Length: 381
Ligand SMILES: Cc1ncc(COP(=O)(O)O)c(C=O)c1O
Picture 1: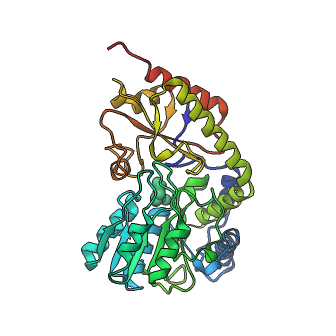
Picture 2 (picture 1 turned 60 degrees about the vertical axis):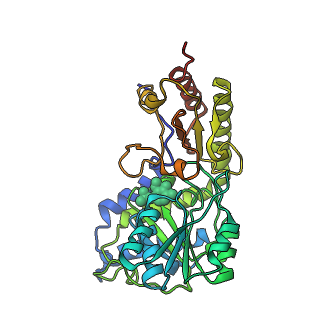
């Protein structure tokens, strides 16, 4: 049976070069990085080499990188640190954020009485910066948490404008960059953003590994206590092979970035053109077909059709894996909070997300288009 994987915003396959870097570490470097003997020191050295390599690729100081179990933990850590250590009494975020940010801000509200405010969006899904400015004009010390690229519809937020609006009033700024890190260049320390998050499995690295970037000016404290690893910021024996895999995946991604993005953009264009040929009534949520959107994601809205409710399942039967929304929680697609928040939800029309990687081929796109044409074939009414 065919297996066409078009769900790379949910996760990506491990790059062979990354598993090659990880396996010797997994099998041979079994010392605890906190041990003082030579095996322990070897393990510790691998972590610090990864940290330095990552920092160099991203234009920041190594001490700004705190390894975590992925994007969710990094988002949680940023929001908690902003409230508990930096004294923020308000979080300004959006109803279209990843659930890691939405649930963390709600938690901060429940636990510490922090006010949570949602910013407005323009009809194309971008944040209304004037609305953000007017919210920030009054009120207590604030953390603004707005993602770089949305994982469901691919809209990219103007980080520079948001960061400027924050700096004008002394607000802190966290951005969930899980979908863009390794897909776009960053110079982190120059960005003037307080916190950013990264997850290795979104760019052909291992699952369960990521990091929080913290601008050096922000002095945050531990949220997970114990043995004091990660300079006291995140206790627990480090995921050594995962950290090495993260470093290898990021290096590989940045070395090939121009080629990868050119390839993925052409694949996406082929998909857009193919879809338009299948049905002129097909549209793209948040202008996800446009060049200015996240090049790995295409959010497609199909015209009314009897197969709408079954489309994901029928495509899966055809061997095409895609998504109806975010697959982060359980794989269940219970309706998308992002489509709802941005006003794209439509009970009559199915929305599907196709997301691509450097491994996606032209042949796979053509096969997927054929499968889509079969699932959404015209019916007599
Ligand atoms: C935008 C965004 N933030 C955070 C996460 C969570 O990352 P992780 O799976 O590493 O916990 C995801 C995963 O889908 C995501 O797309």
